Image 1 (cartoon, rainbow, N blue to C red):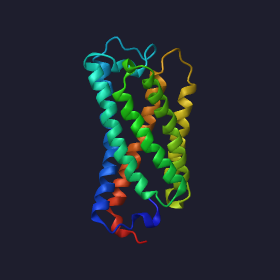
Image 2 (cartoon, rainbow, N blue to C red):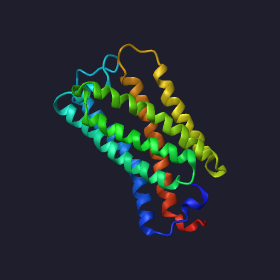
Image 3 (cartoon, helix red, strand yellow):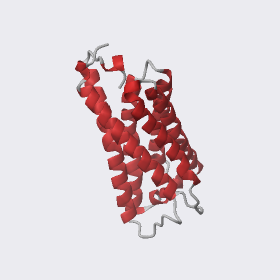
Length: 209
């Protein structure tokens, strides 16, 4: 992504970054697939009257939904760690990827502590949807400092802004719609950056310090 970052001398490091890139791509795909499967097993679910977390309470839907968050959190954690390795020399990027790691841990925790777990579920859910745009703002700002990555940086910041803006959509007591919209936006960003990370790690030998 940025200059000397891609001058990798270790094949192990390259493989680690490629694995992280793949995780960035497949994490949202797996999560969304299992979430929509959970919805298909929940004829009672309403986008206007329920929260997505209602899917994680009982039955097959709960298994599918909570599994999606747990596996998604683990894969996002690997992705975030890979991003952190290429932003170590950049203060904003380093801070942003650290927050993304915490965000991944929060996503994992939502699956471990569903609605039936009580107040802790609310805490980890709020943490996830707060840390997400924060990490995007910082990572995007770090990328915009590099001319070659300015467009991707702008996209990252834009996704962060939209992830906050969706919460202003008029709604009743439900939070399913803004949560899903924020998740879809983050998914697009994760896939785009995951592909970029994988491709550039694959061609890292072409870059010099």
